[in-house]
Amino acid sequence: YIRDCVEEGKIEVNYICTDVQLADILTKSLGRQKFTEMRGRIGVQAVK
Image (cartoon, rainbow, N blue to C red; front, top):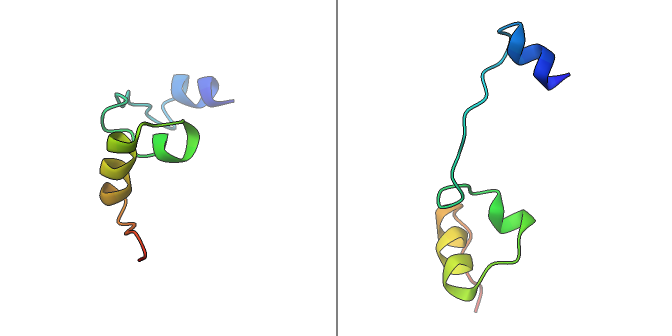
């Protein structure tokens, strides 16, 4: 369905490299440093 929509010009799909892909924090196992960076980028703060 997505392929058809792209071919028909209904939607445009852009590549997002993993360095800036904010969804990675929800879909991948990340190291502590990358996790902390992404957590800050989506606006989530640690609760102490």
